[in-house]
Amino acid sequence: MYTFFLKRGLDVLITLIALVLFFPIFIIIIVALFFANDGKPFFYQLRPGKNGKIFKIIKFKTMSEAKDANGNLLSDGERLTKIGNFVRKTSLDEIPQLLNVLKGDMSLIGPRPLLTQYLHLYNDFQNRRHEVKPGITGWAQVNGRNAISWDKKFELDVWYVDHCSFFVDIKILFKTVLKVVKKEGINAQNTATMEPFEGQY
Image 1 (cartoon, helix red, strand yellow):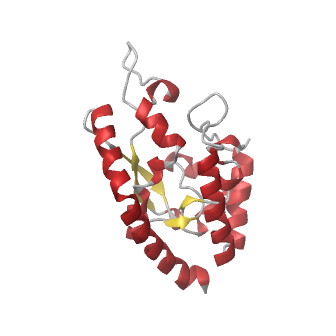
Image 2 (cartoon, helix red, strand yellow):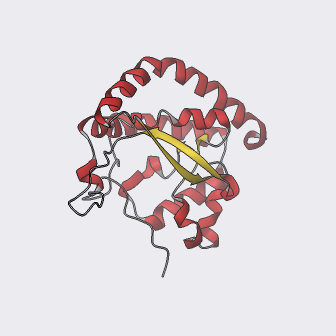
Image 3 (cartoon, one colour):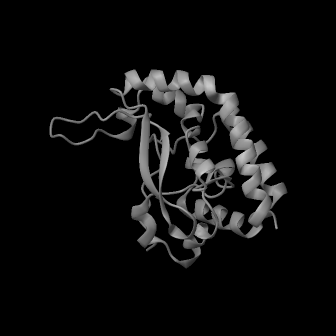
C-alpha cells in the first residue's frame, strides 16, 4: 500500500514544504550560477525513470563548458566552478529535482537516475533498479554515493527495490541529512564525478 498510495502523497507534501523553505537559497544560487555559467544556471539531461521511461532531469549547473585548444571539453574536475564546487559539496545542486518530483518523474527516495547510454549495458539484475521511480537520494547514496563501486551501487539499488517501505524511506532521509552535513561520498576517488559505467565483462 505504501509504494502505491502513500509514497506519492508524501513526496508531494514534503516537496512543497522543501520548496518554500529553500526558496531564498534557490534564488541566490540561480543568480550566482547565472554569472558563473554565462547565463545558464540550470543543467538539463535525459535520464531513464521507472520502467526505463525517459524524462528530462533538472539540476543546478556546477561545471562550465570550458574546452581545450582542440575544442574538446576539459575534464570534469577542470570545469567545476568555485560556486559549482560549493553547491555540489553541500548537495544543493539537487534542489531543482524537487520539480521533477512534483511532475511525477521522480520520487524523493529511490535509485538515482543514471545516464541513458547505460541502458543497453545492464544485465537483468541491474535493470531491476527501474522497477521503482528514481529518487533524489537513495539507499546507495547514504551508503557511499560516488565513493563505492558500480557493483555495490547496483546491489544497494536493487536492495531498495525489494525493501521499499515507509520506515526505510525515513531512515534514508535522516541518513541523507547526516551525509550532507558531513559531506561524505560526494566524489569518487581522484575525480569530480563517478567513473563511467562500462558494463559487466
